[in-house]
Image (cartoon, rainbow, N blue to C red; front, side, top):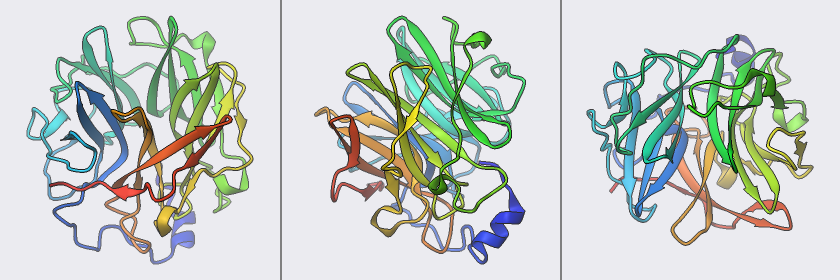
Length: 315
């Protein structure tokens, strides 16, 4: 997420942002997430569509993951709009979940993490204009419920973008500092193809299957064409995490640059899906486009189902 201009001017050279005109039928959300509730899929993400005025988190809806409508959020298309909750810039990487009959949005703003609530997935999501306390800048929250505990996976900006986890208190307003653990940092060759001084591992998503925990994450700066997704496994939610030797799991899929930073969800038939973003084209980074693919898990190994990748479009 951070703008480390010098080395990326060298790496990307003439790579431009936004010179190509936008299409009316394409959804431009980066760091996307899909939440299903009562047969409706809700799509949120980091806003990239420059034709839509305002700041916050837009939301689109679909009944089949193919035909999308929106934005349909309660506040001019936004589920969370600037002024209704914490933050005045940098609204990134939301996650939506339902807990005790309320809808929650964990999100990034001002390079801090905040949590807002609503009575509807369409919003308005609101809070007391406070972020979670932390001694460092932090982004990319992912709240994970496991048995009787709740964990916050997130990225701390310290000597790079590094993925951490901590147990949360029951009110979901703070973490238990004594439980904080580092999970992932970008050390492998594929995770830092630019050999940058500030390596990036971000966008955590976690799920559990047969007593094994899986952590999906993205690596490289988001502007790097090699931005890609890998995963690691652990026997406990706090780690230690073992990165898979077959990583990256998703990289330049269907020849699209910058494939990464998404979220895992299940469709109505129980199939495992992953929503992510790509660069606008192989020459231009943004606005980034939203796409969906299907994942398969066999013998504790994840793979991408052939011919399952497609871009999300409006009706």
